[in-house]
Every structure is written in C-alpha cells, then in structure tokens.
Image: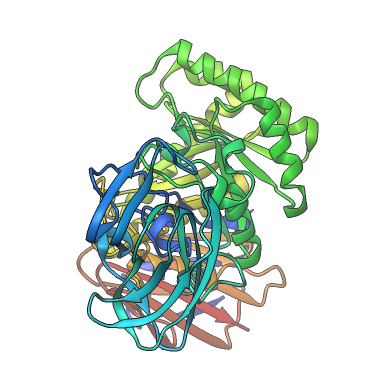
Length: 558
C-alpha cells in the first residue's frame, strides 16, 4: 500500500485499489451531439458562407435572407430552379447577402473565395465581395441564357473585413437567381466545412459524434432528398427552420466524421421508406457504418400504447431493411424511455434481438446530474434483465441536454461521465448536446453549446474543457474506489497497469481537503488537471485540496 496524504487523522479519504478491476470503459465514451439547431451546421460547420442560398425565405421584393441594394427586384414563385421561388431583378439592380443573422462574411486578404450561382436571363451580372463602400474583389458573368445554368466564380480578396457581404449586381436586362453559394476558403481536409470549427471539435477530444435530434422528425427529412449534387437537392420545411437546406446531409456528416477521426452515428426518420433506407446502406458502404438510430425521442409527448406500437412496427421495418444489406450495423432504438410505463416492456419485446442499444436522454445542467443518471442506468439494466435475462441490449446516451454552457454544466457532464463509468460497457457513449453554437444565436432556450463561434473566431466553453480533460486521460479499465469526502470519484487504469487515473468532482461550493490512499500502485510521475473556471489549470504532485465547484483529474504513471 502506498499512502499519499496530508498528515493527520480523521481527514476524508479517497481510496483506490489499482488491482481490483470492476469493468471496461469504451473508448467511444466521449461523444457529442450535433443537429441543425441554433444553426450548428447551416451557418456554422457547413462551409457555405451565405444564408438563404435557395431564396426560399419569404419577402415581397427580395427573399428574406437577402438585402436589396437598388433597382427593381421581385420574388418569383413561378420559375424556381429548386424549391418554391427564385429571385428576379431588372437592371440596374442589386442584392446582397451577409450570412447568418446578417453578422457579416469574414473576408481575409489574399484568400480565394469560390462559389457558384444559378442564373437565367440576360446580363451581364457582377458578383462582388464588398462592404457597401469598398470592393474587395469581383467576378463578371456574361454568357447568360434563357434556361437555368450554373455559373462558377472565384474572387481573391484584396483586403480583410470580418463583416463583408456578397453582392450580385445587374447593370441592364433581366435576370433570375437561384442556388447561390460562397464556400469558405479554409476547408477541412478538402470537405465543404469550416476548418477552424472542425479542428476545434478535434481538439475537444471527441471520439464519437451523433447526428440527429428533432430535425429528423420533420416529414421531409428523407434520405432520397439528401442524395445527388448538393445544389440540386430540394430545400424543405425543417423542424427548426421552415427553409432548411439539404446541402449538408447524412453523407456529408459521415465523411466529416471519418476525416476527423470520430465514430459516426446518425438518426433517420422512422417514417422513411425501407427501400430508400436499404439504398442508403449501399451508398454508405464505403464508410464502414457501424451505428444507425431509427427516429428520435419517439412518443416523447405522451405515454400512448398505440404510438409506441407504431414506432416498434416502423423500427422493425427499417431495421430489417438495414440488416438485409448489412447485418453488422448496430441499430439504436429511439423510443422515449419511461421506466414506470408498461409500454417500455412492449417496445423491448418488439425490438429485443434487433436493437443493439436504447437511446436514453438525460439532463446535465445540475453539477450533480450524475446521481440521477446513475439511478436511471441502474433501473434500465435491471428492467432489461427482468424482461429477458439473456438480452444483449445496452444503452447509449445520445443527448445530455440542458440550457447552459457554464462551469455548472461542465461539472454536470463530468459527474455524468463518472456515473457512466460505473456501469462499464453497458453504455457505449455519452454525447453532450449541443456540439456547436453561434454567438448570440439561441432559438429555443438550449444555450448549451460546447464550442461557440462567429464568422472569424472559434472557442471552447467550460463543458468543452471537461470533455477534453476526460478524453485525454481515458484508460479502459474501471478499478475500485471509495470515498467519505462527499465528492464524486471514479478511477481507471491502463491495461498494462502502468497508468492510473482518478476523476474527482467537487460539486460543493467549498474546498474539500482529502487524503488519497492508492493501493497496489507505485507512482513515479503525477500530473493534475483542474477545471474550476473557464479553462483548466495544470500542476504536478498529488493535490491535497480540491477547490469548490471543480473537476480534477489526477494522472499517475509508473
């Protein structure tokens, strides 16, 4: 035994036995959830710098996401390239786009901004990067025709301005405009994604990323609408936005995950066509898909037997279609979990043997969120075994939800991770929501982004650092621990026995002094990371005092 502590008796202790292995922790534990809510994707990760590229937003003279500059403009509902309407102009006239929330397009000197626009009519048309006074670069299109045609352009910026705009000018004649695109010049590994945002997600230490949420419940959220060239995909009435874009869909998500090194899982609409879903599995075969969720928070609005039965029926239709194409894909049940309801057993027996996991959504705003999660997981495991002692069904937490992005939320994530570790490999991953959030954008009260961004900056919030700390110190074996300190503690160890990690969350507002009693392990190097504010603090040597409202990771190496 090695006793490393302050001198003196009767002090609280943390006791860890490095040889008493209690379970295995999946490397996929450190997850995040992303969907196009609060414009995480469309306006964020997706590299399209324009907002309202399909001109679908309502407006009398100019589509609502664009601004008139001068001249005669008209929203035309009779001759769109895609969707319901296009933009018409009679020269001399102009319109401009300043991106999401009109917060500006970040233009950087020397960068080449490539894009395209669909036009018909006569011209010429000039496209400019400008601020209304200064022009930073332009391109002219002259060969317009009476039919829709895609025109590509490239503009090299002559100056830097974080709040520029893209303007389309017509000197004379009449022109119709649809499907405009301006792509970020700093793309992530050649994909149509903002490199700075994608790299920040990598820096968070994510191992798993789930693409899904209420957006998949929109009637027109269908696989067939996400196929083919992005500029020809139909805009649709989304759950969060009535003018949603299909420019970023399931394929783009999977490509991103594979390029970034995240394990991908995505949800599909449970009313999608089984034949289309079978085609989807074929289409994505090259990406070696392992996880697909059917639906999202199904029957959340009421404990209604017929609705749960309908979901179970749809689950089986789609899971059969998926497994006919690839029996190795693990399918996730999205029925809303109500442990006291008899409908849970009905769904369980309908999906047992076909579903690999059941999606449990939790809350993480409370620093002690892990206490509730621990109980929920214990109840779920017990019920699964009661309903079928031989079941292999396990759990995923695809959404740790809340309304904050502060230190309390970071501690809620840390105690949730501790709770999940205690259940070994019963839980595949715990995905904090939401991965991203534009500064100042909050449509629904979920002010919970782990990473915030503007057109030119990206930074992590406290939950980002809690995730980063945990992932960087992952070890696969759960070992025994106990404490009388009142703090939330778990301990893990490497397979070779040479590294030991202790996770300590002090949810109290006051510091706690505790002795650390480590059994059957001889430490040669100790590294400590503590989150008690906006960013972590690093130190050496075993801590004696754990600050109030803090998450501390002690890493010991032989």
